[in-house]
Length: 257
Image (tube, rainbow, N blue to C red; front, top):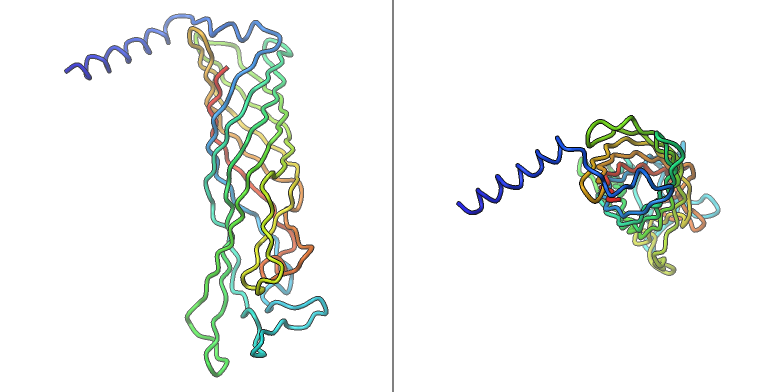
């Protein structure tokens, strides 16, 4: 009974705050204000493959790479897929008021994210005949990133305790995770490597909700990398079939200012 009364009380306070004009901590009156953010994101690759991407792994001279038994280290590829994987981030907000309906925002964020590619190979029988059975190899890239987004936020007029807004801009991303070394490992045990730095463009929309002492803003944002993320300085069976590797993010954020 006490829990029910408490829940009713919370609902009553929320409904009351929607009908009363809240101050919001005065964030819209300041030329510069600050805040923080929590983010959940989903990321996946867009894969652009080479014309001969199905072929077994070849060495630097274009010859099929053979193991100690004289067999190709990998069979013919059937597909390369990217699987959407989750991540999260925490960051800060610096907001500069340009006008009543526009802001310039800088939101440095620390992001923890895992990306995944799935390689599907033909499996050959003893007589070299293609079997119906397929072999799957998963390659993950564990990333710890510093993101530095700069964007323009365009806001509607305030209606009671909320505004709608859209935003667009670009961001610079740098990996701060230590690179794993795979020199000397068999080709099929080597890693899929990404470049440590890249730029992205992004766009999104959200809502500003005003409370008595702060403003909360749920936001959905899409970002797409401008650069090729694939690091193919050291060819291996997993980066050789790929021409370009782009990254897409869908990010849900909660801002508190």
